[in-house]
Amino acid sequence: MANSNLGKAKAAKNDEFYTQYADIEKEMNAYLDFDADVFRDKVVLLPCDDPEWSNFTKYFAQNFDKLGLKKLISTSYAPDAKPKELNLQMSLFEQESPKFDKKKARTNGRVFTLERDRNGDKKINFDDIEWDYLKGDGDFRSDEVRALRDQADIIVTNPPFSLFREFLAWILESDKKFVIIGNQNAITYKDVFPLIKENKIWLGNGFTRNMAHFYTPYVPYSKWIEQEGENVVRVAGVQWFTNIDHGKRHQPLQLMTKADNKKFSKHKEVKGVGYQKYDNYDAIEVPFTDAIPSDHKGVMGVPISFLSKYNPEQFEIIGMCENQDLYGLKTKKYASTECKAAYTAKFGKPGTYDLNASGVVTIGGIQEKVYQRILIRHRKVAK
Image (cartoon, rainbow, N blue to C red; front, top):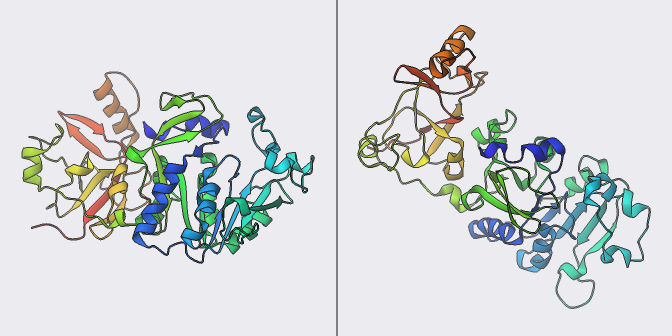
């Protein structure tokens, strides 16, 4: 499943995934199409970002004048703060600078700034970037990078996936606008989903089919990460997370009624079958986003991938099917004896089936736990 895609990278802290320029440009264009002045007169911070490797600085520097930026700031980690197997070499950009310090080059992070035409060519771009060493290793949690965060209006980056929770909290405590990349599984985190439910953050325009192509110095290790070329991998289940508005977020889903879905749905789980009600929630199971019935007046359980099509004017998110009943929506909690009995009935051997982890439907007398579901309802039901 997609939520396992980056598991080993997270465990090993081998999560140096560098975003393609075209993907950055496509995402930023979605915000610009909605509001052409979204970046105008803004200070943009790109933490966890090395211009020698990352395309975020390249994009914003090359489009500095077009976007109307006030200032661009990038910070990068010290080489010694990164995994040793990367064996990062000093760039000529750094080595040929009068500021080059052989010791600091290994132990200190760097800060790159762009805000003026240094070379007199009457435009501000990548060639005008100035840099210096940070006092520390460039960790975003340090006081000096925190101070840069406080200067910024917008934060954009692809943070280490292993630090996503902490990085998002770091942004939110400063009440900044942001666009960041993360694992789709982050949607279900207990400290992330409530923010989505309350429309404080949402998914961005997105990668095609939720798949991203990254540059990485690591060798692929999972069937979910496919080698696409030298040091380029394709990873499923990757999303942009943001609190900046864009047009896709306001596009209504075109849906069929319950009756039409039962007659014409392309999904065998729905066509000729209809919708089942959960045994443990007052809601119906909708296994596919395009099978959401337009005329259902109650609560519906939908896949987490629904969020890439979520329109807050069309739907209300009321909770999630999960173990702890954080949203007070469960109508039944299963005892351990019931979970064991369900496992034996389903698999024919002793074990425990965690029925409390999600919605449960009964098919042919067998209790089935569905995949992770978000609970939604229509703001206005079609007649």
